[in-house]
Image (cartoon, rainbow, N blue to C red; front, side, top):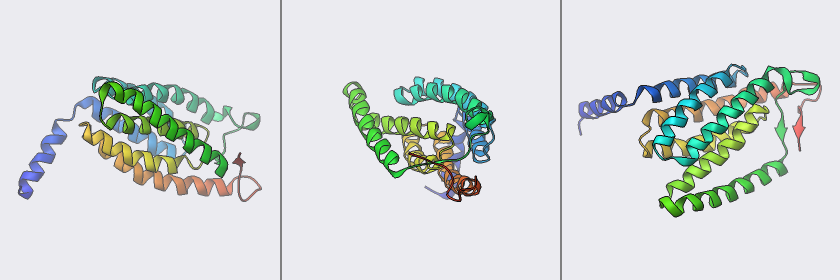
Length: 213
């Protein structure tokens, strides 16, 4: 294929992407940029984006991804409440914190078990390997979203992994704009980790900042 032919194919592919997916992608991108800045309005973008993706994924029979959007909407409401200064000690703004290594180890084991069990249950009717990838993306996203809502620093490390996997999943299912979005997510999540880490190190009188067991 010539360069001109390849370029025409890319343009045609972008033109074929439905407006609803573009809207969801732009809102999701807005969510991430605002989340990096710890701006509570990120949750409004998340709720709107998830509502659109819920319909799109349900139509594509991505069961876990559709269910995940319901969770995102609920967490969007909680995140807005928490980030608006209702979840910190004494009603203060929620600070960036960290989890202990032990808590991360338990979380990772739980995620692997949930992925295998959930993937196996769905694969019994659908077959193939996609249900396992779908389950992995869904369960890691659930945990990472909760960590974002609680401003746990390491959430961005989880997102780097799961966004890379999700990008491949969405591309294979024809959601090309969404796939490109998740590639960008990987880059922004890496930047966000260092931005939040700087804020974490500045917080409080303890130079190490708060750590949750």
